[in-house]
Length: 356
Image (cartoon, rainbow, N blue to C red; front, side):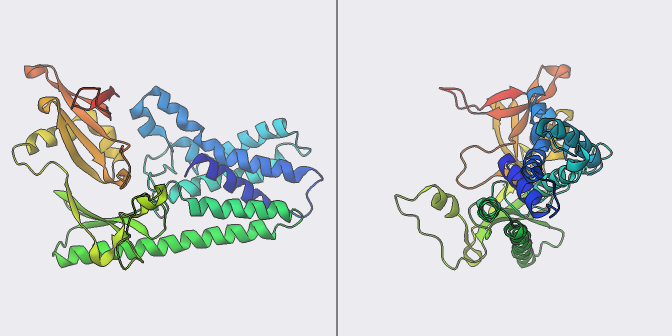
């Protein structure tokens, strides 16, 4: 979830749960504390300055841990009590700070990236995958609730209603995800793939847009679908941004399935691709990528590139989390080194690479 939506959700929760007997002047402080605390876990973006691998390993780690939540709430409530000059000190803000951090964790759990909720004891990434990383409907419900709370500022009913609508919206998305998974299961059954693993990832613009996957050891079969659409969306020449983002999602009956191999479909390339994928250089990416697929070769086969299909979105020019390994050295001293893929330099057909 984007940081602004996290922050707004914390403000909404602070208003919805505010006791009636708050001290005078505490409600604005409580809402400010909810806003700031719900955004705070994303301060872990600073690990990105240490390198891409550090970001993959630690983003949504200890700052998003339910185990450490009481500690973060204590630190944040103490700090914010000083900044906001809360009359009751840190104790008056501890509850909302705990709820703010909890709301942030919950907001990230429903997306596809994965959250290490048991860090530092475990690096397991919990994923519910019901909601796209930037969901304008989700954010809009929160914003409407906050505006209504501002208009009827003496009542918390608008904020409570918005929280209930938000929970219902995520519940609806959970139902849609199960329907999307059924589409993948039906496709696997149609082809007799009994051992296949199915998945579904939420997509932008509408909660009915999904990409569904049927995966085995060799490849991923996937299709971009809209669960309610009966006919493909026609795209006029002057279509806007949101229309272009929405158009690729086709009715289930007209789904266009694609195949993305894990290690290339060319038999003579598979040993090279497997060697790159299984190299020590790619260990962190192997841990991170949920739907890894072979992307391409570059530099005469010296570099092998992979992507995670979770983040391949129709209409998006650049795919994030596109990593690879390049062979360096000669003879017995050949080693694989990991890189992040970057746009090709001017005048070159080979992608650029950023050391990890």
